Amino acid sequence: MTSTLYGTDGTALWLTLMTTTASDVRGRQLAWLSAHAPVAIVLTVAFTAVTGGPWPLILALLPALLGGAAGLVPLISVYGLVPGTDPHRRAGNPLRTSEDDDGLTGLAMHGTGAWVVKPQAPR
Image (cartoon, helix red, strand yellow):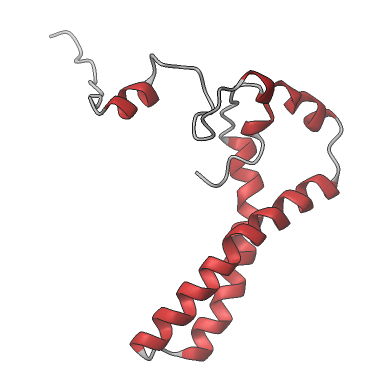
């Protein structure tokens, strides 16, 4: 859910895709890191202290995993792009980025669930 960096751009996405620069991607990566790295660092240090784990291994893996994740986030965001509603057309609910009430998100929000049925070949 945190890798929809470009999905919230709405119809302004075409402008970003046509005039891509490295600074746009790097800025979004830094924004992702600034939101998620502090939580990851606090949780890693706390749980390593509680378990008495291997500090050198954990402190070496944490920056590597954060850097790898910051690199994969733009890739996943563009590969699995799900454009949302334009920002000027959104309602007041910040958690709702789509107006699609008939899809799986509408079913999941109402708690009814959805079944995926694989069609059988005729016998």
